[in-house]
Length: 288
Image (cartoon, rainbow, N blue to C red):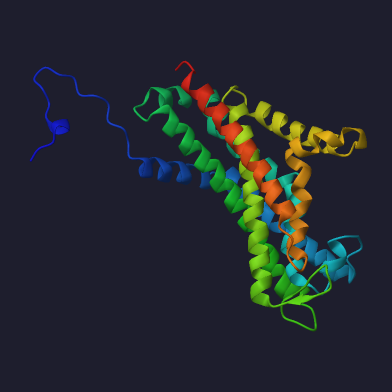
């Protein structure tokens, strides 16, 4: 039996055929992940834990406080420390660059107009661009975490009393549990970067200049950091995305506290929804 949708009436004009979503996603991921700029950024991010580990081994001392005092002879702390450091600037920068190229860069090169006129669907276009930015975030976090694990295990080394991890609470956990803690830190970091990427996409949809996106996102993060450091503005803490970014160190405590990780993830989810919503509205109402 032939469906009604397959029957064409004489003289009728066939409607536009939408490209399969899977093909659009594959094309976007190939374009994003094969760009030399993306590969260079991923390589530089992977160098961060390597340089940290080499510095600690060379000096035979962490030479700092907090996480750094835990790294020497406790290698699986290194990927968490590297993620914590990169989250303050380098990882958001990588995500902001991807978001800037996704819409503002396309507009600057004149290719966004063709995408808006193509039978793709503007909502699908926003989805595809969002997945591309999320992919950069995931690969960037994976590069830092993987390089941190390898450097921590083979260069810094595990604690003498265990092959796993000596927590900040003074207890020891096995290697399997320690790797799960690192994976939890990585997944949580991707969630925070997804929020940054959504806000960056919203800015990218409103401008034709990629540098404006970078300036707006990084400037916003700096302002959030300043506001969070002022005791008189403590009432703003629940509204600032960066408020819970130090919660990543909770994966190194035993028992594992989930309160700060959960609250910061919920906050990032709010920013994600708002950012993607603004991007969708702007794209749907934009003139081709």
